[in-house]
Length: 216
Image 1: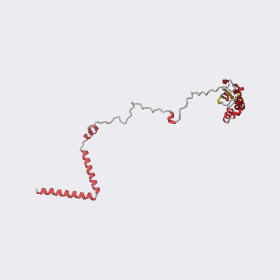
Image 2: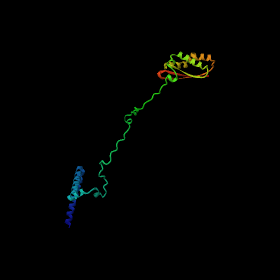
Image 3: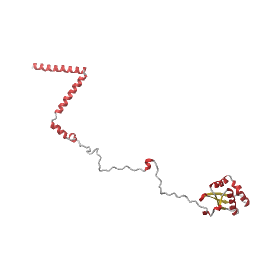
């Protein structure tokens, strides 16, 4: 019995000395501890691999995720595939103006009807009634005012073109129309005060109709 105890103590002492030596070796050679740990891990992995027989490994491969974990497999088997049952929706068509910034082209069928001008005949006038100078205009105004004998009246005459019509308007701006016909008319018919207004209208052929309104 004492002999057996001595043997055990001797073995324990040898193991203790070996362990101390291993600790010292790992302390002074850090790489040694990593090598020992790697060897222990490999031995453990080999033992785990050898624990499964070939039949058990084949059975493990046939098991599904739900068989192993006990949870229902919720992954869609068709995930990642585009179904051909639904037609793709076409892209919304936008007006051409949204792409190039241009406005819609006006309808070529739309006909713009110009404003029709009156003619000399519409006013009972002829070519002989057309006035060709500012003095002719002054004389015609005096004659038509005199025909009304100084009473309220409205009348019109026609000048040859817009240039002469502009000269007529200018005579009212600078009041030269007074010397042209108005002063003589007021003296002849004893008119102290009066109202006077004119208006112009373009006629066919470029003629300008001058409308007048006289009031006492």
